[in-house]
Length: 138
Image (cartoon, rainbow, N blue to C red; front, top):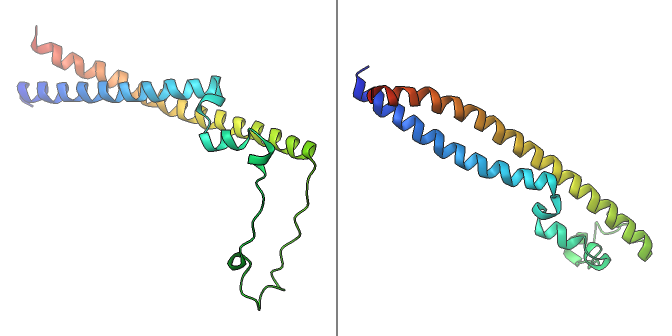
């Protein structure tokens, strides 16, 4: 391989690895924040839904088309909705919120692992190719 072509190739690889490193470092830092404080990275809809019993259990509206045609209405008759007390709703809401936080932590741990893998691939690639770029300067 000719020296100028090797230099261009090495410089390009260095540029791409620095760009990838920067992106994955940002993604990894966001995931780390999500692991340490999952309430911050929790989806807005999920967070808002768990703030009160009224948002967690909205009033159910039954639309006629959702139940099916009149012929199948008796076959697909839905179970009657059981009304829960405020304390039962609050307990279910808290349990669901805790489950959502645990899911958010797990998701962010997976993202953090992916970003660490990408960073550990980018760093050696950069230094190996940087040696080829710096050979020209000697």
